[in-house]
Amino acid sequence: MTVIARYADVDATLGVHSDTLALQLAHRSVRKFLPDAVSDEHLSALVAAAQSAATSSNLQPWSVVAVRDPQRKARLAVLAKNQQFINDAPLFLVWVADLGRARRIAERAGAPLDGADYLETTIIGFVDTALAAQNAVVAAESLGLGTVFVGAIRNHPEEVAAELALPPHAVATFGLAVGIPDPTENAGIKPRLPQEAVLHREQYDAGAADAHVPAYDERLAAYNTRHGLTGTWSGRVLARLAGPQSLSGRHRLRTQLGRLGLGIR
Image 1 (tube, helix red, strand yellow):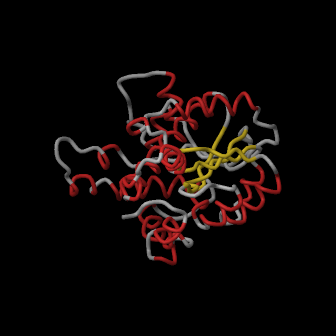
Image 2: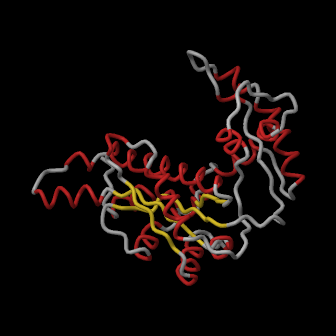
């Protein structure tokens, strides 16, 4: 049933099954949490899962800051567009693209690290951080926890870095609110684009893929209506990427990353 919900299509099927696949298909963002704490044992398990993700050349260029203090969460919430669920979640994880560790190794060894000055290395930092965090999300859901990513943590990266005492050459990539889902939340499995819109065989076929977008707009609009939301997917894309004014301050990231010591050459 979860594959039907994932695509909002009664004809959607998969020819294989596993418990892990079922868990992934049932993923949803959780923005309403019960007050129960997330234990240190659970936190340790999430980090272990994160560390089991792939990492480019075993660089492991990420760190994570676990925030439970209500006042610190409140300050981070203000920096991240005043999203109340950050305050409500018992645990807020801030995932950090951390190239400072490699810099400190080079400094102690008296070795050059000029490759860290280039955009490629910064991209590796962001990609590896995302891979690690997604592993943590799957682990959290397997333990009965719910999560939601918070990209708005990039709205004010320098202020977030100061709040978390991040070292040079490190930047908060996104937050992750974690807790036990409140069963009263009006939310469901949000439909995704049909596979035909994203899966290309051998070569990219934009015309064939884009032909599936109108039907998806209808399905997502119906989902939104059921959950008190409005609009289509295409409308959301256009609004979110309209221009600098729609990026919530993140159009300044190139300059801010440079000031934080991440390479953009």
